[in-house]
Image (cartoon, rainbow, N blue to C red):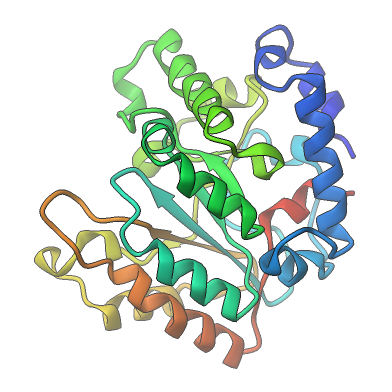
Length: 271
């Protein structure tokens, strides 16, 4: 396990985020996941199955957008972003549990503060939690201090909401707007940037020209070994439908039919 030493290389800033106790809890959970013994149905499923990847440990993910898992095996990772509300979450978690599929949920700090029960429920169901900034701004419009605040404030909000050991050292940029310099800043805070291979675009809704069929098609068109799929929880103001919640079971079943299994991104942190 390399993550504690990596984090120590970026002190004192990283020290404020990953206290010794928090790191120890995370290390213990990641080790349990690797053995397939994590709490919750999702944790016992895909997370425990070994997968051959190029490089393991937090440091191996630094310096990159990480839009694909570096493996030749037929595996995928399922991720969800949440910033608006928790619409569709019940069916998403039910479908993941029914298929024993793990996922990683990237939440904004603002969302976590408004929905602490959601944070606790995702963690209790055995899924990972990632950092999606505090207020979902365009990072290029911020100062370096402002970008650091967005990351650290979101981390504090997730911890305060009860993320516990389900909290990962994973960060996803708002709008997936990355740059080498901004990735370096995030890495210095102790986080690896995890983006995505494809977005279903379900977040656009029917008014944005999306349908469940098109969301499923986009996901399957991008299917390849190590693909990272991005979907969304919630709906923007004035909407109630969540296309990704409707598309998820069809996507998971189609992936399985094509010989793919869903793995937990946290397995990348284990040796």
